[in-house]
Length: 547
Image (cartoon, rainbow, N blue to C red):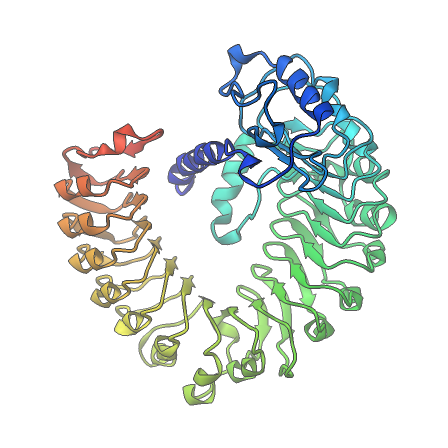
């Protein structure tokens, strides 16, 4: 829970800011006048709300005005019919969902998340695309919407496994969405027209191992399947081979076991395959690498998954390839030269076949994101990775679980196009390299769970484009005062320097950082207060523990 201590308040900030953004009217777009029947239906819907309990009174929803200009409403550019109703995050309350809503049969997108409608049902027809966020049990009536072609009831979108243990803690603490009764099978059994299914962070564990069999049986025309962090278990059943039109498979962050099915190589339209953070084992089917349309292959953090990386031919569509924390072997970096579309590469240092850098460095100039894990940066071995500093095209570098008996090399300062640098669970000794101050285009810098020591160098003040800075949870402990140069980071919105050994007074220059919305200086030996207009913002979280 240590890492969750700072992430959870940050999530609250982001949710709050999102709720402000969701108040923006769709009416800024050019559109004809609203259809009169639809305006009447919306006004009737407004009358059903008890605004004593709501955070928004929908002031733009007034009679004799164009409803296409109302907050949260979007209209067809030709007919003027309402096609979008987005009232998410408005804190609306009513005893029931007024039936006037059901007259808006032209709706293609409906988002009523983060409101309370007294557990009301949703109509069985009239909507083609549904995006609704609930809390707790998913309503059974969704399974009756037989005309649906797209269903999105995800609890969390764009889940990234980079901070997976914290994500587990956050999602567990909220218990956002579950599928028990109705079961997953009940939910999809009537949705035979479905083309897109998004259930990210919906707990489907109660269905056991039948989830893949259910998909093949009831929704064989699926093109997009996204079920990340659904607590799926068991192997991938052969019934899933019936999804012949599938283009996107996102099953990351689950507990899926067994092997990666050979039949995945028969999905000729497959563009995205994400299977990271599961319990997959055995040999990865080599024919999957040959799929011509495959653009994303993401299988890291399956520590029993093995395989060999082929010599790629020209013409591959691969843009993202991530094999970190697996048992893949024989990764020959010069082979990636034929992957001219490849921009995001993640590999495990233990799998790399050693070649002289001049064999491959000039063949990796199209890589913009590089993720490396389990790299040995010690002495002679470490010098074999100095080529990283020659990849001038890099905009993102992530180093994790690396080991070393020496200080971090200054080559990091050569990557002057970096916008994001993330170093975690690496045991470099000594100070953070002064050359990091050369990375003046950096917007995101995170150094956590490392073994750096010494003081926070003043060169950090050169990083004036930074918006996120985290240097925390240091094993040996960065110590001494926080450099006053940190006040030069006037674009910074998030500052996390917790769980280190910083001491002395909090620098007054932090008052210059007027865009801060989150500060964590906890678990240090600091004294003083922050004098900053930050307190006038909507939400400020500041933790300071005095030892």
